Image 1 (cartoon, rainbow, N blue to C red):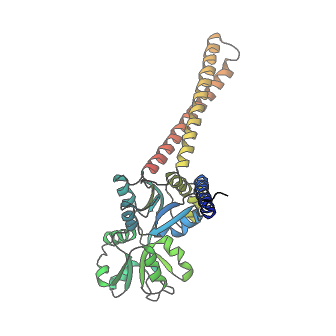
Image 2: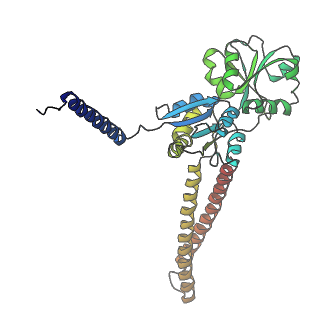
Image 3: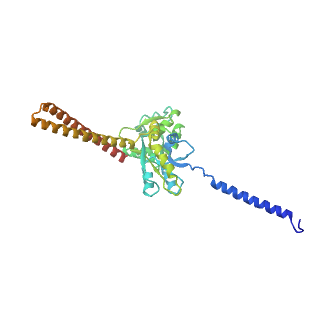
Amino acid sequence: MPKNFNFKTKVSGMTNSRVILAILASVALLLTIPAAAQATNVYAAASLREAFQKIDGSDDVTYNFAGSGALRDQIKAGAPADVFAAASPDEPQELFTNGNCERPVTFATNEVAMLVPAGNPSNIQSIYDLKTGNRKLAIGIEDVPIGKYTREVLSGMGLLGILDTNTVTQEPNVTGITSKVALGEVDVGFAYVTDGMIVADQGVQIIRLPEGSQPAVRYQICVVKRDGADTAGAEAYIKKVTGQLGRGILSEAGFGLPPDPADVAKKQKKVKKVQLRVKNVTKNKNQVCKKAKKAKKRRAGNAGKLRTRCTKAKKNMNKAKKDLKKVKKELKEAEDALKNA
């Protein structure tokens, strides 16, 4: 061994090199492993909690349920939302106008109702019982849809004064309202019919509002636009909500449903089918009646039979044209309903 050889230093240097190589190999391995799929973030109105978790309760989706106004503000501030579902068109339409989400679509409707605790201790039978005052009410704050809808109902019925003659607690979302009702902390809560159905097992009763007082409660959903958004996941989620699965679950939960785009597509196919029938029977009528006309001129023996066939062909043509007019009208009504949903 050479006189100046330092065995300890040499071994140490080799060890350090091996460590460095091992670290580099580990880093390279980590870079080759595909990243775990990112969950789609759904920001939704509190009244959708039960239904949405039934539509998709997998680990592929994470939920943030709150008041629609609060969720709108979070999204405007850059929150990592991929889907936004609100209990009114106002919030999604505002985000759409500002470029924060794609064009919203209506996917459900609802009704405002009065909820009373188990046993209805204050014996509330209708909204007019609240005119006597001295009751405890729970309503939504003005910035959330249920709060706006409640005030719209009261204003339309000339009953806004009951907010002054009764003790009123204002909640940031429907969950706060239903909790207070279920716990018996208030005499009446103004929420959606669907919320009353969720807490019905706690004895909460639903009292419907008078006919004609109901505002148009429409839920809208949109794909959020932001850097790094899971657009594909958002579109797939919305497809579930607006498809057969989602519509079935929403209906079962008590929500109303807007016209189904699939129904419009079916009606469009039906129109094309009837148009083809009109074309065929018209062609047949022209051929048969032409033969009948020639046979009449020639005084052929089959002229009478051909005239009968011509008359029948004309009836078939008129019936087909009448059917076409009917299916076209049905298609227009379906398209208009979908457009205005």
